Image (tube, rainbow over all chains, first blue to last red; front, top):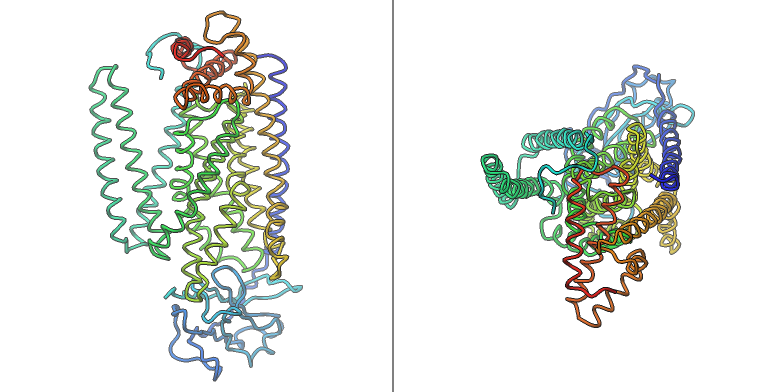
Length: 163
Length: 460
């Protein structure tokens, strides 16, 4: 193998190693980002109580029927949270996320005692749409610290059918 | 092409071949195990298989049965005919595996909108993917890869890699959604999931090609071509999947076609070369550089480096794409393009730099070998042909001259001669570097083939 050939191959090899170093830095930033938002040691042991997820009538702003985990996309639905189950000093919120991870309805953040009048949290139809999007919805009650959600106190998954 | 059995090898002490095949077998066994697990999970959790896919399933079973039968029988045959039977068995088993994977893919990806919409989406993605493969193959200006291997790479990306990641991603996603706080933390976890699992699945194809078809996997340029081809195949199936899914979600609102069209543009036009093709091409670059490095430690490091860049590129897009919100104004159209350019552009630019350098490196060495072969006076490469063969443009001009004088037949004859001459130069290059395990006879056969072809084509 000639020296020039080896030098050229070495340049390619070293260039790739430089790129990989940049890649490793990017992945490290990702890990830092993950740890910032998913902080270790945040387990408080507190659990919120979700009374259920029900069909929702937006006109009367009341829930209808039994607790369900699956809805047709033509139905609106809402989660009912028993805020009394959450200790008052905590700042909390409750949110709906759709299948794409977009927020579709929330209450809070506030102290749980301030949310007692907002026990029914309906899912929102996206602007300009007639129905909710189908897919897997996640409802969470979160503990907030320094403006950032740090712990999930309760969670429910709901399936919205395509038809 | 090479059928001799026990002539002297270029490097008689090389232990690369058995070790490579052993690794290839181990990787293939792992893939088969993963696919078997995938099929069991499909059976357990996805209980309603549409009737149309049963047809593929039956064909798959039949192909694999027949292929296995021929495989078993082939070992009772003499050495001269055994190879042909092994090839037949391999082709049949390969078709069976592909059909079986198609069952899973059709079921998993196209059920949401129905076969009609899925077929239209697939048809819409075919020309763009074909264009991508054409461009990627043409990037190897000195020594183009055979279409069969480029298509095998794309098929792996489309069918095997997508099937491999389905269950891994499902398990990761469900576990993360049950354990993490929704929002940026969960999004970051899912970005790691996509980067790691998808690049590993695609990278396995590049690695297997390298291990099994090393004689067609010459250097960094070939690695980039095969890697990009795997990425384009994956992008094809992912585009069909997203388009059908989005169509089914938005069609009740009367926006299914528009939503699917936006997906098509984003993935098949804007992201054709910037997304999966770029990421997996880095894995190919790592494997291609490793192929020519002398020390095992460097080889491993180069391959790992390729994977790290690919995973990092993929991760950064998935994790940080939302940092560039697209406004609902006319500027949004510009912003979509800018976002791709800013986020994936640097990765693609780095890859192009590796590619250009690799082409130059390969070109210089081929020129060196062409000169050396011409100097032997054996007649396979004449001294006056060297500058023509070393220049893609002059080669093209020579072919076009043949087209003018003898039509398409003349064009293809000259093309075959040029390819055979470059094959010979490539073989010489690898032999000089002791990175080849085909026997020395192979080189002489290439030489004879060139001389045979030359009888049909007048010297330039």
